[in-house]
Image (tube, rainbow, N blue to C red):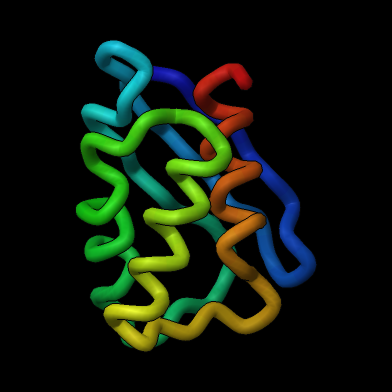
Length: 91
């Protein structure tokens, strides 16, 4: 299991993940940020399953998640999630 933390403008994002062929096979997100609605974090984890651990693919997946769910994360944007995940992936 790979692990990283990233300090976003409003909270720390913690990422644990496993990769299979450079794609996310398992991911767990946590931290001290706010996300609404409360079940949105689990939905973000589901949206990231199978996504290649590269900046463009991750950014597209996270932006798609926000667009499709209307989730809100005050002062934590798609680029912060991507940076945290890339750090955990080792890139």
